[in-house]
Length: 71
Image: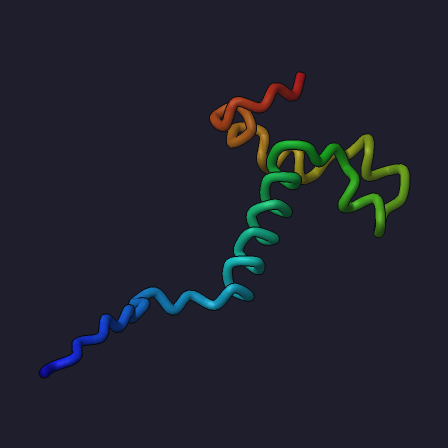
């Protein structure tokens, strides 16, 4: 008699570390585009970064296209 066994082989070998890294990059990108009001550059420039809003001005149109209100 023949005995058959079923073997399952996964064809997706995406490392979990890569998924975590991609999720972290997405989260940081979402913060920068959607919510940053000078917070990132305030680490370097101090309080002046909250009035200059460099990243806000660079991503202004992208914010509106993504549906983030900013003014």
